[in-house]
Length: 112
Length: 115
View 1 (tube, rainbow over the protein chains, first blue to last red):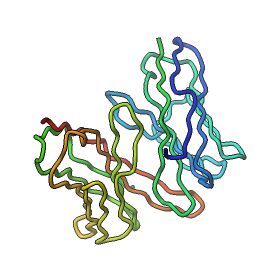
View 2: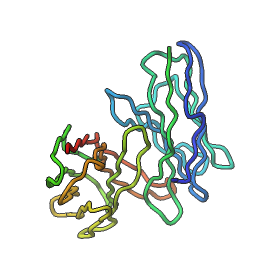
View 3: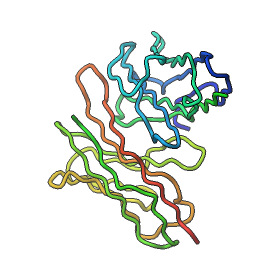
View 4: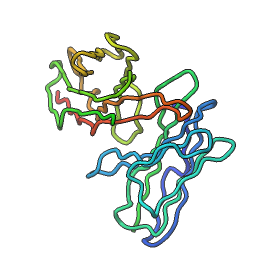
């Protein structure tokens, strides 16, 4: 158990809809990262937050947004969903005395 | 900018064969280097790490040495098992001031070990 939690585990929705994925980092970690993993694209970095502020942006679509709250949990919002958004979405956290990332179990999103 | 280049897969080996997965990096500072493993249906787990030049990370029979002169961090295992079948990711992190760690991942190498 990495200490990073993600909810929900599975999500099935329709095209055009909006969903919110939630992540709670390890206790004490200030950084949260979001990744998308699909079969044809591999692991794609989306966005990083550090202590509530956006710090780095990767290949994140404009339809996607994220935020980190004062209690350090983070949410990834995906809107106007398309079939191609079906993927595993991972959250990871980092910080404290450790410099590695700890990954959550992921949310599997299926867009029908 | 920083980046990681990893050996393309997939790799298929027989049980007890020797494994090498190549990883090279580009970094402006002095990064930490990692190997992560992803078993089927699971998230990424840290396999091993090295935080400075000439450090050797090791875990579960896997090893990798941080080579600054060749900017490499190749993963090796002397005798693979069927249970090692997974996707392996090489990664680096650079600690920024007031930004937290910046991470860069390779594309992943799929390993299948056959009995």
